[in-house]
Length: 272
Picture 1 (spheres, helix red, strand yellow):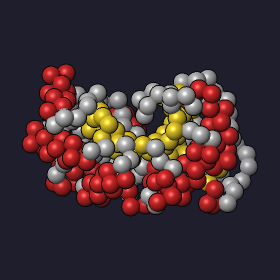
Picture 2 (cartoon, rainbow, N blue to C red):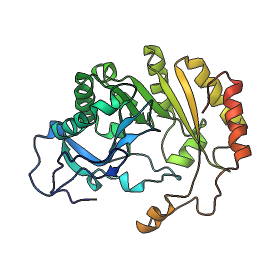
Picture 3 (cartoon, rainbow, N blue to C red):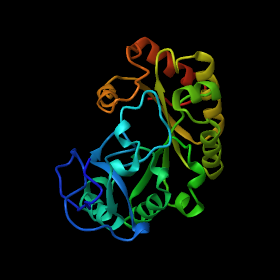
């Protein structure tokens, strides 16, 4: 990623491209109006409903064993970018995303930069755009009432449903994520629940059934996405001399993936 002494500029790009939002040049502006950006995807179709402008923010407090983007863990691996520049760039795609799509803030973990996220959400709502936050929920306590009001949907990644498994997988506690899910439910804020299926790690029927029961009881989960683990990010761990604990773990079979989807369906949830 670019060094930290560069500043982003809005650059028109063909729909569907993923590229860093940086260029050499100007100095950073005021802290409150800037944040660290890893990259953008201008016409995403898997991070929320419809066609999405997806902004990947740098920084994440979790260290998930299956993370395929360890290059987003550290905030300063990204590019310091102003809110105004990002909103100008989003405005260029407004015609594509306004009808049924919108803007998704992802990462890394976007809530490592809550004031930046808040400013971006406010700007997007001022343009009449649908907004979504793609988060682990671990830092959900940082979402204040104003930020919540500008959120239309949360893509909530619940990575496991026991403290033991969650900590083994992420190095963090599960409880903050579940607290955030309950808060979203109390406010009637729609959730798309994401669950990464890793053989030997997150394929235990008892935990999946317990998570499904929890999600069904919330009453605001629109859909569950079961995401099969893959090895496409393994090279990034090696490039950074990180200890990759899932080396040699095969992706789940289609039979196991369908079995997992069925466990969620049995709880009355819609599953993709």
